Image (tube, rainbow, N blue to C red):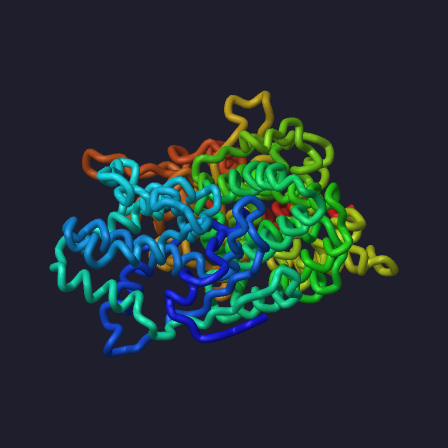
Length: 618
């Protein structure tokens, strides 16, 4: 490894002449904030003498046909690409005389190079060779108008600057052209001089082809907060390994197209973040964690969960893999990715429109995990979905899993039981990562493996805690329990057998009870009443909340509603088709026109029994 200070000319004018963006690296992703920062640094060059970061290249040997030197850009793709586009925008903005007089030599030496000594100017090649994703647009920007009088034409309807759609290469050029066309020839000269003077603005690190420090440098840059991400490093290493097992580069590039770029480059959501407690990870990094959990038994996965050094997990576990084994890892990542997007990401995005029925075990589990923010069991869910796939076309990004397969149905209900019972009792989730890995390796029975010797006692103790917690459940828990128990009451014989999770939680005896629910002699004390009000037996689900004018009224008004002027304020009878609520209305119609602490206690006991029956460990 050689590290030295370097100017932009040192980087692009000397050997190796061709700087290639490896096909497995992520595409050009800089946006306006980055372009603006780079331009300001160049404009303020004399005042700030800026440091523009590090450039890491790895020698790749001579071109077989023309013998010029080649190297891979390991880090610095974004900066070098932006500088090249800005240079071309300056060149295109100058008048024809100034181009030839002042800027043509820079273009010939710093954007292009002669591939062999006798090459004619129109045979010069671009120094930076982009990966397939950006190559067409980059070459169009750099080459157009250099050896002919053509002008660059970009369909702006395909490049939305505000919404960041279309090629970032083209958007970068349009951004700089908009600014350059407002500058004088003197300003353009100054910018070009600042770019291509001899000031050392980079640290250039050059690695030999067999340098073993590449991964260490990748990791160091990643920790320093540069653009390399965990997924970038994993992708780089896994496709390098695939390449090392074959001389057919084209088949490796095709595999990269189908099983990575086709899936991850087309959807920016993969690089957006999701929260895991105090930890933030991108969707693609979380997906790679889920795949690792399903492929390998790693102590670091048990100890640190999502906070593990994921790139090291992949590096160590694939170090002895051959071509077929590495290819299978790549396919597994691709398969899990399209499953994750369809059944986890898209599900959570469209949750308000999803409907649920009695037998939708897997969908109900996904609802519970989403609403309770339980993330660390998704590797198990992906395993269930993967093992229940009935159709999968990775090229078309199509997948269909049988959500009603016995594997999905039984597995989902086992996991749902564990999560719901722990959520009711407020148990810690700190062991969820370990439990997840245990389930993947040994099956669902390990969820209660700690209870081998005193299993019945532990279950009974947990049941007692559930009973206690149902006297004062949290709102999200009460709503989910009532929703799931309602689903159990409906089947295909009913007129309606599916619901959306969009009900309101209602307290029958209101929290503000003093005005319309007066205590009488022999009734409970205020403290006892307040305790009863917070029990799950005093809660029900309504399709829509009651009007504020009757929300705290007496039981009769809450059930029947009230006419106020010409308007009907609807009560329970008008706002639900749910059977658990209809039971209360039916009792009212049969003469049970009051609602007391005894009723609340009895209903709480009934719900408790239903909870224990539905989420039964045995």
